Image 1 (tube, rainbow, N blue to C red):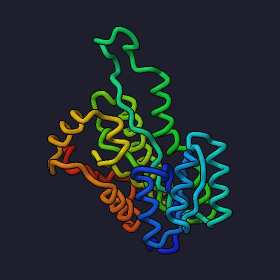
Image 2: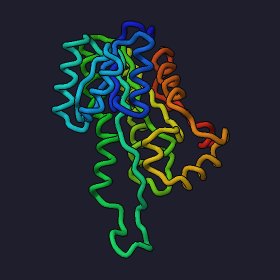
Image 3: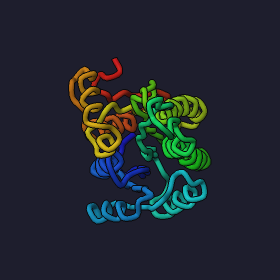
Length: 249
């Protein structure tokens, strides 16, 4: 896919990886719809890059997703690329036997993590894929997974959500491929981002750095490069691209 002039929707675009993906695609000539539920943060992004189209939306809300994408279509035209980046990192043991109370992983935390990381991907993908099929648009859907999809101790909910994203990617690719629509997942390892640092202690981060073959964390630009590759390579679908510095070896 030639990116210049293409319409790309990026969810979770106001901070971290999403922000860099949105700016990276805009720099390559895409007409970017930057979507985030944080109204103040998305306003800051719009001020930083006036040519960017920004939309406030909670992508775990089906009605909000439909309304938001309707606005995107009205302003920018047909969507060629969807990058499902919205989500949250969450760490918490299934059971903490040394805790005096609140030993178990709560249902509320589980629901929040699954909705943010997996349910959101389903809602946006269904909306965009349906439109692509009806309009005969040959597009690409990129889902941001994580190395945690293989199962990180202390991250049961997050791991389950990201494993679901990868299974969803493969199944969706089989369903929509005949329509010329590709679906790809990207699984970053530990990236030097505020969300990663907020989710884990410094000791745990250093331990993961030691377990990474390259002995360092990646940067947002590494994920942006993988997104661009997924969009441009027209024979790539139904796969998971690891961008993890060898931590999964």
